[in-house]
Amino acid sequence: MATVRPFKALRPAPEYAEKVVSLPYDVMNRKEAAKMAEGNPYSYLHICRAEIDLPGQENPYDISVYQKAKTNIYDNLEKGVFIRETKPSFYVYRQIMNGRVQTGFVGCASIDDYNNNIIKKHELTRHEKEIDRINHFDICNADTEPVFFTYRQNKKLNSIIVRVTEAEPEYHITDSMNVAHMLWVVSDESLCKEISEIFRDEIEYMYIADGHHRSASAVNVGMKRREQNPDYTGDEEFNYFMAVMFPDEDLAIFDYNRVVKDLNGNSKEEFFEKIKKNFDIEKVSDSTPYRPEALHEFSMYMKDGWYRLTAREGTFNAADPIEALDVSILQENLLSPVLGIGDPRTDKRIDFVGGIRGLEELERRVNEDMEIAFALYPVSIAQLIAVADAGLLMPPKSTWFEPKLGSGLFIHEL
Image 1 (cartoon, rainbow, N blue to C red):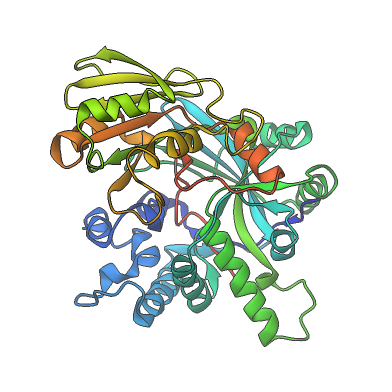
Image 2 (cartoon, rainbow, N blue to C red):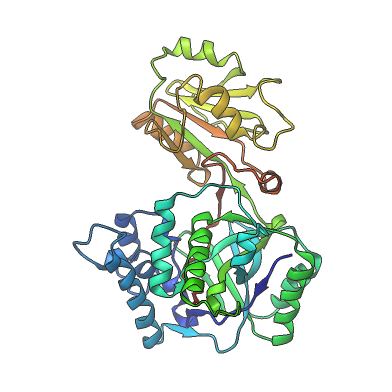
């Protein structure tokens, strides 16, 4: 059962919250981060992407970047831009994007739950990306951004969310992407205890939706602190890491699409002949973008228009939670055998486009620098949970969650 507890967050004073909130560190490059933060000294990008404050420092992983992030955190605290909660608290956090609402809890999860697979994973992590956030969290002495969990919806937790959100929120702000962020502080000791007890007694597992690298990094920092403090009791803050926890019924996964540089030496006719082995193909439009309408259906764009591809029966194992994923079907039946994309994580001929960018972005890429694009039907939350419950890993770039969590609305000091 899941261990979740309240914490004393560092967070923006309400009058600064809209200026502070930013997109997460890993959805933009340095140049984009600098542009987003331009003219706004309060933007959280000065903390999660502190290299933008170090002219001439081209290495985002240099020790000076993490030290600058820490300086910026505590400068903001001293100036009153940030405040420190006086009591351990949970937070109810709501996001609204295009009319869709997701509401969950912000609290701290246990590094032991992560190590014991109470917190379940569905992706591999890359060591170099872990090291970056390990250094960031360790030197800042804080979890500077939350991870994104889901859990099977629970009536008691839903009831608490309804009760808490009847009051006015501490924040009700809108970010640069037109996403609304609302935050309620839950500092009542008895209610905090009730929330912890429901997670402990009724939530068997939590699932990482987004933030596998941040989770692994936070746990690594916690384990390092345990080695440095061999007499630790288990109650210290470094035994826990910050997470936003949404019920599964609130979440939506967007498609995560593919664009490929060339046809792997095939003529167009040869390419079509080869993919007919595993897919039914139909030309659907010369110019109007076509979106897949069901599982195991794909749309394909080439310069002459849009095609519908439908995976043929018997070309995949529908009973296997990994092989039945559309990302697996496309990879094993087309990208690898026909286009020669053996490892999509390392092959320079393939790129990935989040569904939030729309199908027009696929058209743009093909018309500018790619040869062919594929749009997929989104993975469902149920599929993600089934993969994690089976102890399996999804193929790379399987899921794209929107909206992204707001960065800077809460910090967990270690």
